[in-house]
Length: 338
Image (cartoon, rainbow, N blue to C red):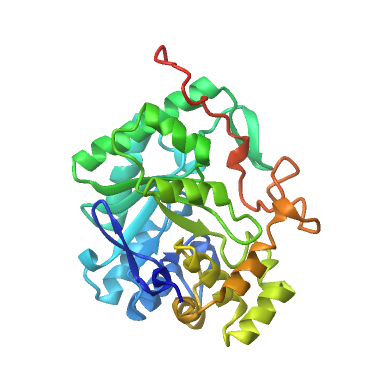
């Protein structure tokens, strides 16, 4: 095993972030017998110390309840949340920008019952608007100048919240290389993290490499099941590697990311699965295993599921929403008039 796979946390500007976190998207929807609060209790009692949530998941209250019930002190737990400038949660706060950002963070602190959040991400490099679809059901702002101005305003608001002590670290989600490069125009604090859809079908090697060179931690979502599809863990090569390494297909999928130094956020509400996911840290993949999984990249082969629920506008291998459709300002073009 490489040394990266033996680390259990990664250094951040403020604190140490565990490299396996409990994902909680859709946890509210699953309901009894496994509620979101129950899964937080199970994970914390098994030794997880990292919970990943978002405003759009609408489960901050449940996470607070789970933390209380677990008996683990708040300061031992790394909490990440995200703010998205689209959807019903935004409609309740007004229009995208500074005021909505401030309101989301105050609401998050109140619901989580905490005075600070360890990491807050901007959930997507665009805002609700017209003219651009990044998913069959998501309408975004097509005007690059408008969306740039709002990316800048939202980021600078998050920076002010770091200075106020309400947020310890800030980062981005679903940003590709050009969205990251564009930040050099407006960011005083560089993002600590970029969390994006990453799996062997969609390895985004260019983003992972760029982040490594710029000391930005990469986090993956969609590692095991992509949206509603168990496509990856049903692949013959994944099952073969799992059998050879005495692991499960889900553990192999997580180990692929961990091998590359990527933080993983597997979501489950079943105690046995939550434990199984944590044990992915014990799986040693060989270089050949990793190469076999890398060969599943949908950009370089036929036969991938297309379209997914993302839609026909999305790139093959993309299951959630497609940031490659979001325009950015070209590097080096001066736009101070914005």
